Amino acid sequence: MMAFLSPREKKVLLLTAGIVSVTALYHFLWNPFFKEWRELSGNIQLAEARLQRNHFLLKKKSQIEGDFKKMMGASLSVGESDEAATEMLQEVERLAQTHLLKILEMHPLPAKQKESFRIQGLEVSVEGTAGQFAKFIYALQSAPGSLAIERLELSSKSGPNQQLRGVILITTLHLPKQLK
Image 1: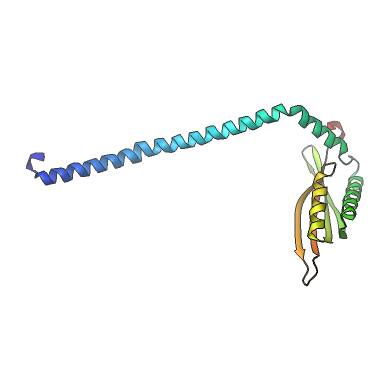
Image 2: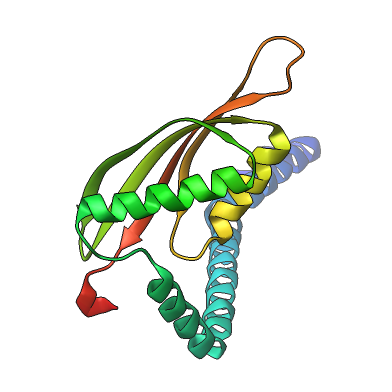
């Protein structure tokens, strides 16, 4: 068959066959190979990062356990739901007064039971400046116990007043006495 083709047609045919062959090799061999190679490389890097993090945490195991026990010791008591809510109200009110925030409204939310612990919530509506809010939020996060901010909504009043109004949902965990 090649004998009937002119030299120019033979060159075009060979060039076309070469392009088709390279394209087929690329799509069916090289591309899937390098795609798999990149995926495996990414998985290896992820596994190495996890291994390094776990190694770091294992080095600090005793410190982490000590901090956990200290935090649980400082946690709010495991009394009735009303008692825990009262203690939480007092702590948040003390922090708000310390940082000069005006409490507009504060009410406890129903406790939620999760697996081996209970979550107590508190919704607080407060008013103050941005700086007062920042100090209050920092104080909540670094307060002894396990107070956490679940939601924070800030809005500004219209006019020249620099006051912000915020609604904050604060939660804390309560562990059963046998876990403490």
